[in-house]
Each structure stands twice: as C-alpha cells, then as structure tokens.
Length: 317
Length: 303
Image 1 (cartoon, rainbow over the protein chains, first blue to last red):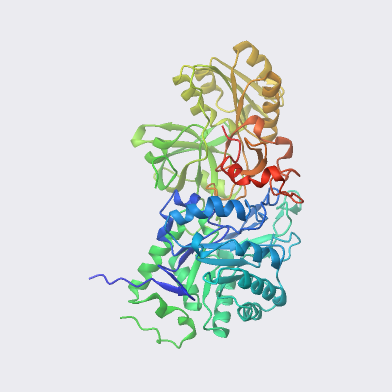
Image 2: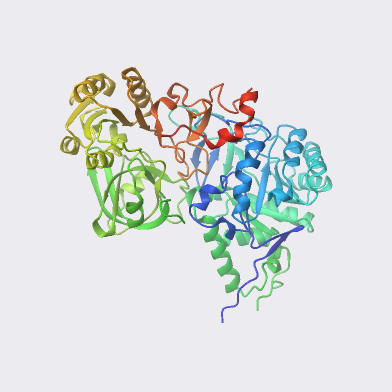
C-alpha cells in the first residue's frame, strides 16, 4: 500500500497545502503559468513585486544568460497597486489558491502604503517585502542593505498592514551579515523570512566590452546560486530556529527543494527555473513527494531543519 | 490546460536539414501543430536535461504538416552554444518544446491583396501565413530582403506560393540591390496591396511600418526581441507599444506580441523607456490616467 506523506506546512499562522511556492517575479501574475497547470495545486503563488505607482522598469536588454543561471534587471515593471488590486488579485482569488503578494517601494512609507491596500479579505494570504531587489535603486545596490533601514520598513509595514496578514521579509545573501539582517527584521515584527533574493552581478558583452544589460548591474539567479542560498537558510535557521523561512535560490528539482527544507526552510520557492520549464513547480512538487515517500517520511514538517540534527536523528518508517 | 493555449512536450526530431544558410528542425508535435496559427512561435530547451544553459530559445514556426499526427518545423542560424547543440540533434532525439506561443497574425475576413515583407531568416513565419492567406482567396506578393544571396530565405517557395516575389540584397548579389523598403512601394502599387505583413529585424520593421503609413495601408509586424522564457514570466522582451487608450506601455513581445499593429510600435524608442511611457522615471499619474484600471484591460495595441 502506498502511504502518502503529509505535505502540509506552516509559515507562522499560515498553513500551506504543500511547500512549493512559485517565487515572486518569476510567476508573472499567475495567469501565464495557469496556461500550463492549475496554479491552485501549488502551496502558494507569489506575485511580481507591487509598488504604489505604475512602473515601466528598465530598458532592454534586461537579461543575459550565465552558467546555470542568468543576470537580469527588469526594474520592477508593474501596473501599480491600484490596478493590481482591481485586476490581478481578484483573478488569483478566483483560482482558489494561496496568494503571496510581494511588495516593493523606494521608501518605508511607500511599502507601508502599498501594504495597507492589501487586506486578507481581498485574498492576500501573505505580504512578502522585497527588501533586496537589485534593480530597485538602479545603482547596483539593494534598497535595503542595512539592518536599521530594513527594520524600519518592516516596522512601518507591520503597523499598516492587516493584522491577519503575515509579513515576511525577503532578504539578499550578499550583505555583510545576512543572519543579523534577518534578526533585525524579526525583531521589527516580521513573521518570517524569504531567502534569498538574487545576488548582485554583471555580464559583459564580449563583442562590445560593455555591460550586457542596459542597467549595468543585475541580479544573478538560478541553480548557480543554490549553495549560497542553502548556506544562508542553514545559518539563519540555526540562529533563529523558531522563525519560519521560505527557502529559495536555484531550486530546479525535488531534491533541491529537500535540501532547503533540511537546511531549515518550511517552504521552498521556485524562481528562475520557471523560465526554463514552465511546468517546473508541479514537477518539483511531484519529485519532492516521491523523495519523501521513498524515505518513508510521514510529515514534511519532520524533515524541516533535519541537517541541524545529528546523523540518524531523522527517522523514516 | 486550455484548448488553444501552449503546451509543453518532449518531441522527437524527425529531420534536421540545411535551408540556405540556416538549419531547419522538424519535430513530431501534434498538439502544437493542431493549435498553431501563423505568426506564433515555439521555445526550445537546449543542452539536454542537465544543461547549464537555462534559458529557452525562441524560434518562429516555419511550417506545419499533418504527417505523423502533426509536425512543426523551425529554423535557426548557429549563433552560440545553444544553437550549436540544436544543430547537432539527429532523428529520434527528444527535445523539450513549448508552443505555440504568442499572438498570431490576424487574417482578413475578405479576400484582399496582401504583401508579405521579410528580412533574412526572420521571414520564416511569412510562409505559413502566405498559405493561410491563399486559402482565404487573398492575393499574396512577397518582398524578401537579406544581406547577401545565401541569406535570402526560401526564394523558391516564395515564388511558388506568391503572385510575385521580389528580392533585395544589401550587396546586390541577388535581386535588387538595396533594402526591402526600396522595392515595397512599387510592389504595393503594382499589386494594389491592401495590407502589409512584415517580420524581420527591428530596424527593417520600423522602415516598413513607416512606408505603410506613408501609403496609408495597415501593417502587421511580428517583432524580434531577445527572450529568456517566451511565456510572459521574465519581462525581458519588452517593446514600447501604444495602447488603444493612447498610453505607451512596455509590452512583452512573447505574450502581448510578437504580432502588433505596425503603427502601435514605437520603433525609434526600442531599447529605451520612452519618457511618456506608463510608469517611466519621473512619470506622474495624471487625472485622466488615474482611471488606469480600465486602461489596464486595454493594454498593448495588438490587432
């Protein structure tokens, strides 16, 4: 008899049917992926970052391929929160899945103002603060590299947002001390952490000897950054074991997802690999389920943080 | 998921052959063949299962046949490691294909006269379009341009399908020396063309759109932009396009296009964010645009 693994997972007060999340900025509005599968099958779909006003983003070229990844600088193109709430959010809600709304801003006040317009009643299951988008500032720096600044944004949003909506802080890995940054966000009221966002990088066109992207610097994403991301999740979970983490960075297979879960992530987001394989999220979910069943794991929550426990401490059936 | 949306398949290669300076791969992909409408493209994963090349390569669909339940052919030139890998595929190899993608060419209801303008291998989607127009009783004339004779694409099939086929090359090695736009006005006058369809490099499309505007006939263009995903997720392939509401937005070539009405694409501003585009730096919501919610539904001036 085939015994199935219980894939339900918790992110603070929010329960997900399974741990696979389509990552912000890599899942469009949800509609694009819904042409390939029922997005309600996923643990959650995270939207592209929503800002207060419409935003055209950066000029093309916006991306360059790199080994097992890409460098990109889209510049947070989006319709603004008003159109998002009237057009995209009701559609997502109508699909019956769980929606994580990614929020970006150029000031703590902007983040808070956007968050204020995203109530649970409108189908917002979580707000994820994009505190680390490489291209938001346009100078190759993250808007929020500094723990004090990140904490200020989290505090402003936590004060403005619907108390029923958990707020997660999405952080970069290429800061001097990612664990301290994570701690500062939690201290300021973040209900959990999403880590990691893309890393700052650049590609240079060998023909022109100029930066390949119009924006110069971009964000490096894809399987190339996975060990950095896993390490970040591991260290953060060790320091803050009670804080739920959505792990991400180059997840391409069920085994990759399990790595993040063992490192301490309660859920796993799939980003750049959606570009390579539009069915990636449902494939990864299936692969993860098969892996857990092979190991005889009853509940996925049993293996969250397994890498921190002594050898043999994770028992299968 | 839907009747006419794209599908992802692992499709067997039927043939790999050379067409002029290009490679052509035909795959057995019945679901893609049955959904295809001219102007649409497919995207191909390259390098195999454990490839370090993550991004899909987009290719226009050049031909669709009913053989083996449905086959699809696409063309490419070897430009890097990904296309080199593709050129080495052999019969029965499986490749990961997603398609058909993008907005197709709108077809006229009545049997009108159509001139089809293409540049280099960018002309590929014009061939299934020509067949579709002929089936509707339209007159088809071709104007095909390229850098040199070996880059003129499928001259023989163009002559076979069309009433007339005019060729231009930059070096004069085949047909008329010059650009497609040097020949276009005469062809339009001789054929009494009612509509222009064009695909090829952006600068060529810009000149064709301008020529069509001068002649006061409608033009549909299929744009070429670099894409990372082809499915509308990555926002890499954006082009400034004027919507029906008069507002310029950065439209995705892969999802909102690749086919746009020529006069809607701001060719002179490709590769920039026009200062008056929705959400451009320094852009401020004006009173008449605050109701941008309705406008959002009318995005991108397609067809």
